[in-house]
Image (cartoon, rainbow, N blue to C red; front, side):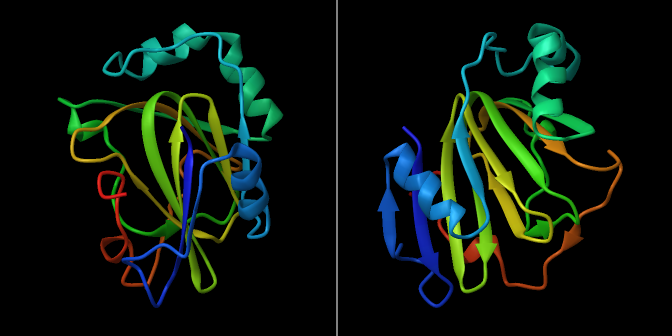
Length: 178
């Protein structure tokens, strides 16, 4: 089940509201410029398979997904609990262009800073989250990451994120604490 927890920056330990219905999640995120949808997936790559195997298992579906979201750069997050080295870097950051996260297997929590609010979305298989360019965000995969996800961005694949000046993710509950 997808879950949205909305925090005010002055109260990072206690969510202002928690939503579990996809329509409510999408509506609340849209108020902050974040798009949420759910997609039907054909393949289900197993965590730990590696980026080449994941892309091969999805075949033309990757091209269709990246085209549908207007993304040129596609990378794979692939963690099976034993390969923490494939987990994305921690810390709040932003890109100049929009970023789309699609969960293919397992779960992940994407948190997005929007003004005085932090929107923490616990995503599961088939969830698609599109974060606008310039928005601070961070990803939590939990203490024992078990997830395969596509991370798609507009623009060049080697664009570097801008690290945030905010105190950041450590103030807010991660995936295992919610």
